[in-house]
Image 1 (cartoon, rainbow, N blue to C red):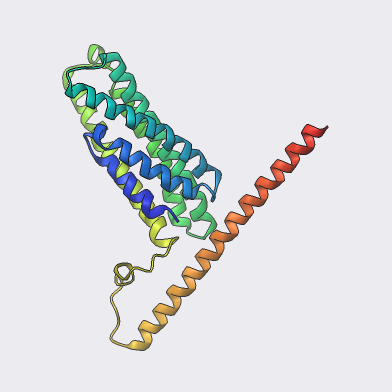
Image 2 (tube, rainbow, N blue to C red):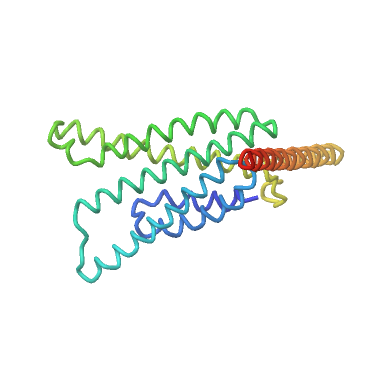
Length: 239
């Protein structure tokens, strides 16, 4: 489905020395979001954001390589690239969460859907705040002690937001994709009574089938809406 791949790619964002891993993280996220783009429009827009993030990640690698040979980029360019990086990650993450919100709601995972909605709002706020902390002008208008506290708050909030977003992705991965791996099946302790285990397996299978059915129905509904829009546009052009 793509959520497992997305989980791995998004995890790499946690690296504080992101200039070495952004390109890899962005490519993995792009691949995952491209696979998910058939589900709804937000995933498709998130894939575009991941493509921009990939370009930024490649640029960062080039800058690092040049620095190894003693060539450094202007400070203003470094500041702008960092701001663009966090803007792109924030937009991509928000669109990703909105896509997860919609698909979770459609398959009946309302609590997960509400969680994704809350995290989308938090992601916008945290990334905007973090970008604000990157502006050097704050050092001229704020006391040093206050600025240190604000920067620490930005780091902690960013780390917490990424972790919470990872839990949301994992929620989609485990509850929508319904992986067959034994390590997930074994999370619930097996009963001593075999008939209880059989009942649980039967219930899990039914839940998997229902989730897959709902997801497939969601895809068909989105495709039908797209075809209807294309037909409407064609008729408008003919007129």
